[in-house]
Length: 82
Image (cartoon, rainbow, N blue to C red; front, side, top):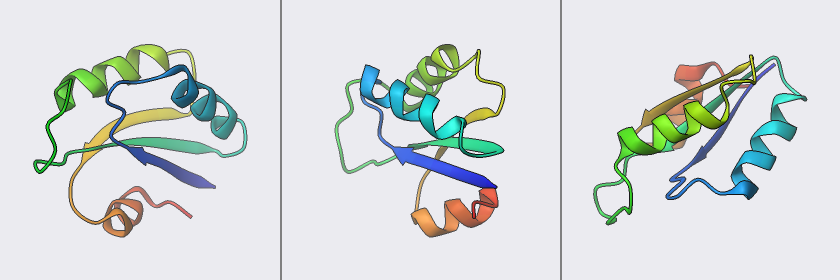
């Protein structure tokens, strides 16, 4: 089973990390989708948020981190999330 956790992650919190760790135990592949939203003023750039998430999840083998924009359903389809 493949799943996604979408969000702005601006900034990444311990709550996000806890949720990611718990979800990763329940699925074969977990994709963290960092939302690009030009209508909001972010504290960190998308690249910085992706890099932060990659760093805090580097020990979780079945997690990957990427950015996305547009509709969540399209992102889920691209990831093969079930």
